[in-house]
Length: 371
Image (cartoon, rainbow, N blue to C red):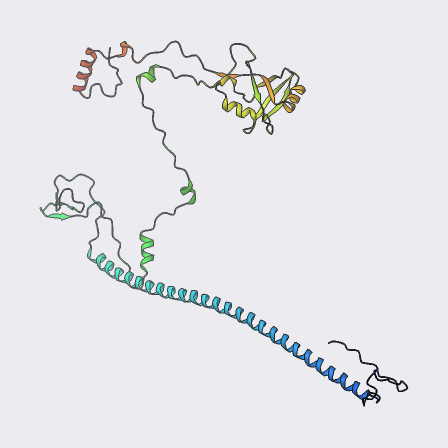
């Protein structure tokens, strides 16, 4: 609330003089203390009324805002409630549909059970003690290529006795009323349990036999060509030089160790400069391999200086010594399958023809055709 200063009342001993020109106007020379009190009361009442009016307006504005927010939250709640109600209604409808379908399936199973029970009583039981010896005479009641043909054989009196075909399995008696058909099916058609180890086990593959040929039999197989052997030019292996330029943010990508004045290559990373050199190199003997020995880098042969050259320089002239794979010399003596001595002559063809015409004499003895 605004604060107003109360006007000071004039003391009784003070003489009030009227303004110039208003000396003869009545009322100026009379005491007016009562007028001050009335004015103060009037101003106070006006101020209180104005403050009360503004407070009422603010309260109404806040109430309207609160009502608006409440109505908005209530609308959102009702929308969510409607969505949940629709979802629950759909679930109830689906449940009812499943119940009706379940009832229909039960009726169908009952009908099939009745039919199967009648069928089980009408079908004759197959005989298990069939003779394994072949019958001398038999006739079929259907076409030869028919799947459902049944073979009949005459008995001692000349009557034909029909037997179940070999493809027809034994039909068990269907359960009586009050017994669940699923329990009987589980008992009569019980399959052996499957184990997880058997399912996950990798089937063993039978190794296929290599076909024999005259060339492979007479010619010995070649030795593997990628064998790690020392070169004949020296007992210490082969040595070669190459120049390598590193990038600014790359290194050689080698794992090195000190060994008697040389640096031995213990590992090669795939993201280094040496690995890039190996991929771009066309000569197999100049590929850097694990186990090679670095003899010098930029003319420096001490291990510490070679490491300094690798750290400080970008252009590196590297000399490496190491063992490289060599191809084993082929055997000087071998038979040739295409030689004229192994080509069948006219006489051998006649011998083979004569052997083929007389079966049972030369089979299983492993004789070779004579040349």
